[in-house]
Length: 394
Ligand code: ADP
Image 1: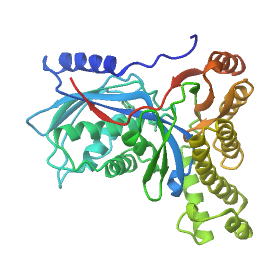
Image 2: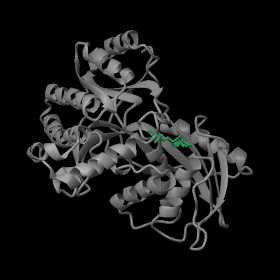
Image 3: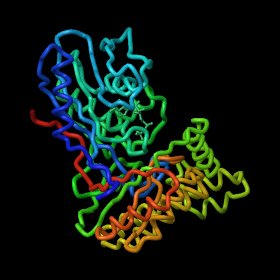
């Protein structure tokens, strides 16, 4: 079908990475291979760091890491992804108590170093590895979390940890905090670790419990549209939103906005400035909406699910103010198509992707219509809920 990006299959990524590994490292063969998926969030945006609910699914797009352990203390890692900053090959020594692994250049290697630093077992051996990925970088589909989780899964093959999956996700989140300086919530890493084929994952970001919700109806399609724009703005939008949520929770006398109701918010309205009020309003409603959406999905009520997706988008646009004209245009265009249940921006915002739930038979029509209406150049992916990170046999 025209304009729909084919998704590179995992076997092709692995064989490409193995070939480059042989060429780069003296003809040696890699003996470990792993993959970790990107994710799309169906609903529950900007709720994870408020201890709320999120409902993402793991994608068929993955980051693959192949390699082998070495006898020394040195790590050599090469990424095949051209969108990563140069140089694409890095060498670093394993950290020890006196010399931790610090952030540096190139930026992409910080995700690798961060995971090595936060890995939960010792002693990590030196290693050589090649990374290949089918997750678009910086598009809001969590290429960074998939890279972190791939690195962690790779280290598990060299130096097994206790196998605690939630602790694995938390370690990868820590890596992003300390080494990429992004104070992200737990969603991306969690679903990359624990995603389940044919299911979305309702994650309670307070208890870190997850419920798999079936999403394998062959009559449905989950269409991702990449706006191919990224507004960098000042770069402080995400931390600013986090801070506004923390401030709102503190004024309401709650540990987090998860504990607050809309009644609490209304009662405190005159103690909140209007922006903080709007931010909290989005989060409190979105947490509730996500729980409702998971129930609708369980019942197979796609119409209701779609309605909640649209409400979510509107609230992200008007209350949380993280959308942009391109995402709004993509959502409006999708909603004009017969057979579309719902559409919304997904991920942090200010660009990146939208996610649309629609009847499978409407896919071609939807793609054509969105393409015609959108002023930019979109890319489309037809996706299905996929498996979380795992080792691959070579
Ligand atoms: P995303 O929504 O895709 O996670 P981010 O901006 O948070 O967007 O993270 C993207 C960054 O993650 C890239 O700029 C790069 O530094 C790193 N990254 C992700 N995947 C890879 C990869 N395959 N190779 C090298 N770096 C990667």
